[in-house]
Length: 222
Image (cartoon, rainbow, N blue to C red):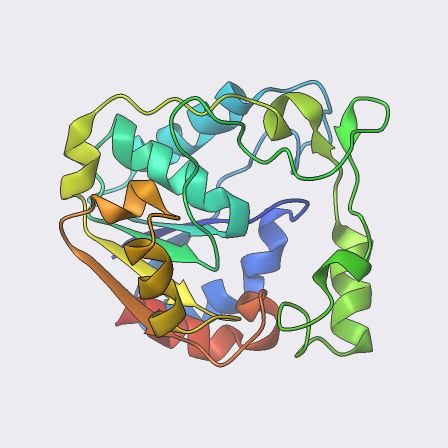
């Protein structure tokens, strides 16, 4: 199986290295696309540029599973919207897709046109509970400021066939029961309309590719 791995905010594709290695051992083909504005260091790219890079990876793969971590849940979901006949499944890790017309990830203030990594204070609690000092230092060291035109880019979803694409939500710092409660409360409107939706738990914080790469690879393989 071709498995396209999309990292969340500030993270280059190298964050997937350990998980990708485990997926290869399990007989799968992980794909980590070069995302403009992250892996090339160019700060002037837009959300459309990142979407184009993801679609290039989808088009080059055979019935891929598209995995989106955190904010990249929206990137993965946009891929399903653009290629509903080609994406075999979407897997979302600790994140939910934005709605049509909303900003991609306008979560923190911009500085000089980019959204820098804000440090660990906003993530204290369940998100970062399993990150030791070395893991925190690794993430902070490789973090890349998000181009403002990506963070504030407008999400466009236009094809209703996206709701036919199966979706699995991987629940790290929250439980499947909490996730289902948010669905029932109307807090995740895009996923509420998915016809084939399931949720699985992983005992980690928000970054299982850092703290539980072997377990995450096994989960994705299943």
